[in-house]
Image (cartoon, rainbow, N blue to C red; front, side, top):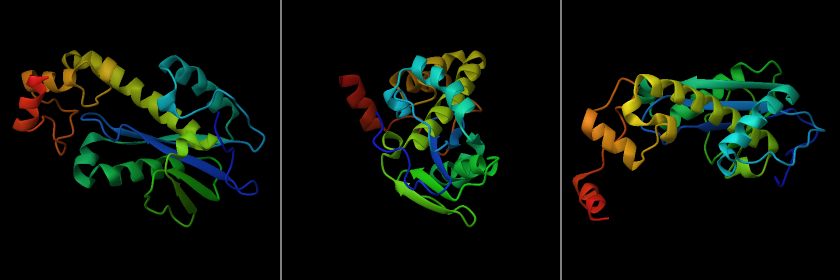
Length: 204
């Protein structure tokens, strides 16, 4: 159960969170969600704490009950151009751009953010485990990004994206070593570990 429903009961708050920041391939997604002040859901939680089934069960509930919701996307090519931190902020900006209701306060999961226009924001470390709107945003970002990676896995089955979603798992990096990167990989990232890391990996 989340600890807080809202930071300020009198302002229109949009929770914002991203998914895919640490991946080696694919875009970064961000969700922005404005929930009604009387909204309650005992199952809503940080997307990382939920099973895949629970995340997908909660997505239509969030989209139906939210006053406004949106998902922003920044491509792997844009990530290579502006770096992943700025790309994460841009994805959040793009999500907020699409909200049908203009928020008065943005609740950001994390400790840094690039200000969005003239809207006040507050960064909360671990906010997706505290505030409902951030948790809801994390679920939208995660599920829609997973949808993208599962579809991409049909074109590039060698990387097992249907299970690792582009994260730096041993299976994913072994595939990169064997097949090389594809057009969806983030070339600004360290796709393969250093020689020392490789040696330690083989010792395990």
